[in-house]
Image 1 (cartoon, helix red, strand yellow):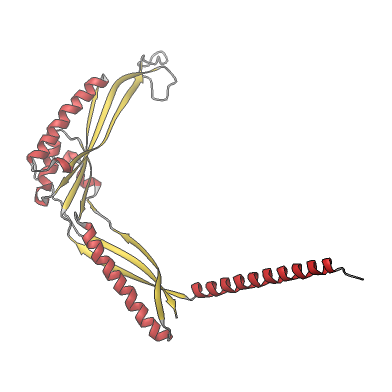
Image 2 (cartoon, helix red, strand yellow; image 1 turned 90 degrees about the horizontal axis):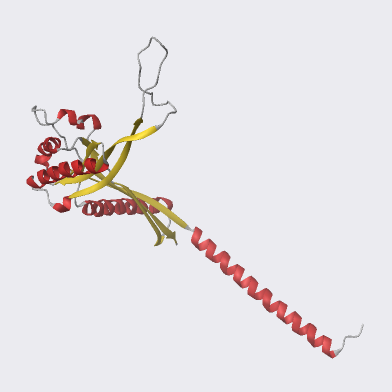
Length: 265
């Protein structure tokens, strides 16, 4: 077969282009394999740091619940009681910034408009809740919830007692926290990092490896507040002229966990 000069040049050009493309592909594949090998030659170490401290702030969650035949009356009554409660908190040297409204809800109350006739010889009774009759609104309930911070822990018992006397009829929660928690987190983080580095130094000697630079860092933590049990906050026990409730503060534990990943040289 006779190949013309024109076709010969074309074949040479096509072959050269294919060879160049093959070289580029092999170079890229080699680089990718090299990079993969580099990133997989790593080792990780975990560390933990714990700091315990006595809480210095109490957080009280409470609600004011009022009911009336009209929405306006229920809200007006709630406003009066709310002012009494807030005024009491301020009298205990609690700043405005430490008193906030957490929620405000108005709920209609439903009932049935007529009694349910029963068989002859029995007394007439009201509709049970499941009766498929006509319902109507018979009143309204307003629930305004607050959150207050008490920075003088010696006043917590007196504040709980005074809240109920002032008009709060639900104490939902009482928690103790550390106000400057970030400072404790920093200390716990430093402990966790040192713990991980000590493990890395010990294990590298045992394995006979050299550690390179840090290529990854992960952190997690757990910072639980201390809560008083719900049954210990029953408002029925406050404001009755008896002794003030005892409120243990306990301790808070700040925990930081870290994972440090090193390159292996």
